[in-house]
Amino acid sequence: MLKLEGINKIFNEATPDEKIALDNINLHLAPGDFVTIIGSNGAGKSTMMNMISGALTPDFGAVTIEGNEVTKLPEYKRSQYIGRVFQDPMAGTAPSMTIEENLAIAYSRNTKRGLRKGVGRGRRDFFKTSLEKLGLGLENRFNAKVGMLSGGERQALSLLMATFTKPSILLLDEHTAALDPSRAELITRLTKQLVEEGNLTTLMVTHNMQQAIDLGNRLIMMDKGQIILSIDDAKKPTLTIPDLMSEFEKIRGEKMNSDRALLGS
Amino acid sequence: MFTAMFGSVEQGIIYAIMALGVYLTFRVLDFPDLTVDGSFVTGAATAAMMIALGYHPILATLMAIVAGFIAGCMTGLLHTKGKINPLLSGILMMIALYSINLRIMGLSAENAIVKPNIPLMNADTIFSQFQSFWSNLGVDDALENFIKNSLGFQTAPNTWGTIFVVLIITLIIKFIADWFLKTEVGLAIRATGDNKRMIRSFSANTDGLIVLGLGLSNALVAFSGALIAQYSKFADANMGIGMIVIGLASVIIGEAIFGTKTIFRTTLAVVAGAIIYRIIYAIALRIDWLDTSDMKLITAIIVVLALVIPQLVDKRREKLRKEKRRNERLDQQRELLRGGDHLA
Ligand SMILES: Nc1ncnc2c1ncn2[C@@H]1O[C@H](COP(=O)(O)OP(=O)(O)O)[C@@H](O)[C@H]1O
Ligand SMILES: [Mg+2]
Image (tube, rainbow over all chains, first blue to last red; front, side):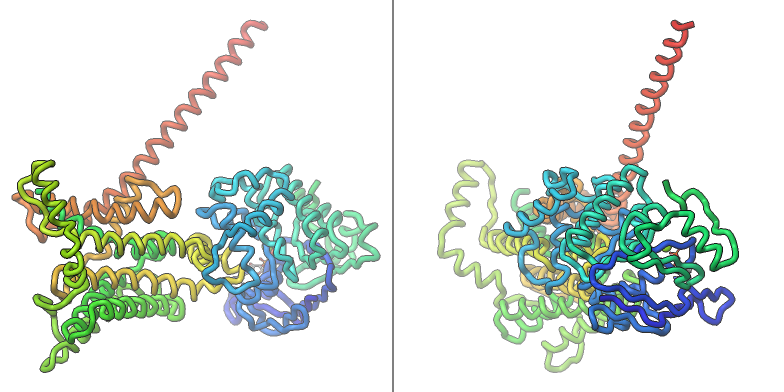
């Protein structure tokens, strides 16, 4: 479904600020895989997500989605295949437009946009049933401007918009990190539900180890631009936080900096 | 007075089309497009040139719209492909258009390459053509009788044909804009102005949408220019100076008075704003110590006030809100303290 082969990315190459953000990344995802990604700040997690979405292009290496090489395809063309939710709840929706207009924009993801009405009658029904799944009562606030919603509501809407057209790949980059714990839990639950329903191939970055262990069928750990640990279907169900800590120590020969955010609750 | 205001309203309705164009860039696309000063004249020059050469006024007006569209797209390309900042892209295009407009007007002359103006004194225009159809309907006589006899005005406008036709045209444009902004492409253009990152993640080419939005906006501006040239029966290379500020003033005045709750309401507000601006203009001209040339200064001041006053009002409101909340909390805390006394 998704293949990253020999991806390298260096920022500010050949200057004193040179930073190797991705160091020969190889990753294969089978259809329906749900991979959680952990790693310290600056490990290159977001950069890897941006390589897949097309927001950045690799210095060398190849990105393949559903058998098509997309390495050079601009972001807006690639996003036909890719659903994304950003860390910032403000980033994934258009604040001055209404809920239904935002949904209509997301709905046109994989069709050519034309002079059809954005929100026709048939679509409105579909939007309504989709919103009901969130259980937040947003289906009764169709014409509310999205800017009036709370951060949690906006993120739930972003998640719905990213998933309801069944993208080939779903990218979630710390999409619960900016929310308070109860909201984050809600979004985590919705993520699980929507990914399972759509059987979506998913990559989720999180700094919450417990979340990384609870969700998905695979887990990878990144550090200094490399994937240093990869846990597969077979081992994931029995994985614990101490396992991860000791694996890290074994590989890196140093203690993982285990601040509270990293451990989660 | 009635008749004088009447002309202002007629003009205001025509300028409203330009203001809708400015609304499309400034508000919808969030792109401060200064091409307007040039493209307004491009519309006027193209229409006047073709009419002077004997083409049908409707064809001339259509060509003006196309010319404005191309000018707007060029600004969009300067910004998106040339990576030039929005303000500078518009300024560059505006300056370039000044020369181009002189050339366009030059096409109407046999013995000159460039021309600073084209008079259309006895030429056929959209308005003169409509007038001949209108006067056969007999509406004017009826209205004149009504105004003089029933309302008691001494003078009445000599024809209602012009205001009728411009109102129809402007309302049609308004409704098309309302419809367009709700289509899939329209939604994508609005999202481009609202959150580029978001709309790119939903497979929209923001560069293309910016170019399209600027093209459509300047098509409207040129349309307005073409109509003004036919209304006032001349085109002039300098008739666009300050147009962007007038457009902006119209948008801001309209929005302030009528609000922006829905698209339908906002475009209506913009049209009304353009008409109100013209009326203010006409009144200002009647003040003795003001000169016509002061109008640009007054317009600039209107825009500055319209931009600054809402900020001050907001700040004041927020301050009051905070004060209220603070007092509530103080009261609560005092209440708690008193409760503590009882216990002790
Ligand atoms: N646009 C950029 N320009 C320069 N350096 C960058 C840029 N984006 C990321 N980096 C650097 O690349 C490294 C990896 O960043 P990132 O992928 O955001 O890490 P993570 O998401 O794992 O915290 C960091 O050291 C960061 O400072
Ligand atoms: Mg990151």
